[in-house]
Length: 163
Image (tube, rainbow, N blue to C red; front, top):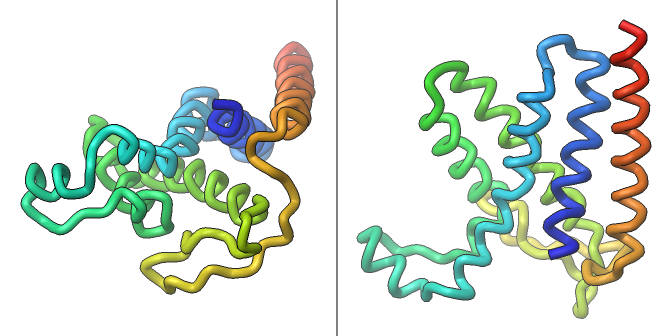
C-alpha cells in the first residue's frame, strides 16, 4: 500500500509543479494525473481473477501483466478518456502522464535479478538493468515522497495566497 500512495504523491508533486508554469493545469487536472498514476497497478486484479477467467469474459487472449507496461497504460488512458464528457485528448494526455510517472519511478526500483520489468512493451520486451535505487517496501521511500509532497503543497498554498 505504501508504494501505491508513493506513486500518487509523486504524481501530485509533479502535477502541482507543472501547474505553476501551465495555466490550464488546475487542481482538477492534477487529480486526473493522480488517477493516472494508479493505472499501472490495476494489474493487481490478477491477485483475485485468473487470466483464463478474463479471457473467457473478454473473448480475447489477455494477461494482466501487460497492464503494467507502456502499451497497457496507453490503452487504459484511452479508455479513461472515452468515458468523460469532453476534453478527451487532454484527459488522455494527463492520465498517460500520471501513468508514465508511475512507470518511470518503477524503472529505477530494486529487483532481485537486477533488471526492471518489461515496461516498454509494445516497443520491446527487453528488461533494462535497473540502478536499484530503492526497495518498494522501504518506509523511508514513502517518508521522503510524503515530505516532498507536503513541501510542494505548502509552497503551492503559499503561492495561492499571494495571487
